[in-house]
Length: 89
Image (cartoon, rainbow, N blue to C red; front, side, top):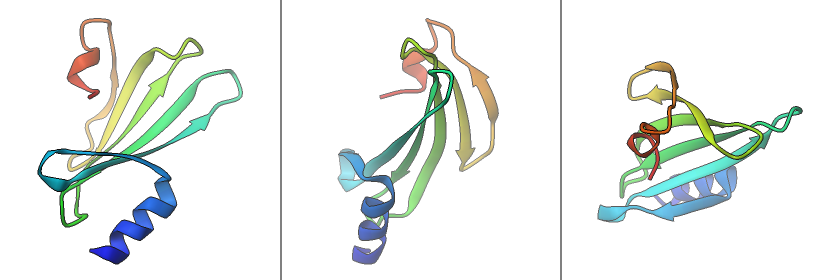
């Protein structure tokens, strides 16, 4: 577990603690046109991946799309104002 945690900390650089001892790791990539993507990996207390997804933000910082990749690839999901809290924490 220690090796996995060190590897995740090195790769993602940012994280928050989750209930039950897990963590939410993330890193951001800025696009050329002002948009950005945030890659998010959620792990349990044993550092086993429980969820991995990508969030897409527009040039104003608004979440516009989520692509959940693990545990099941659900493809790209467009976000409307009412949906936002269903995908972020």
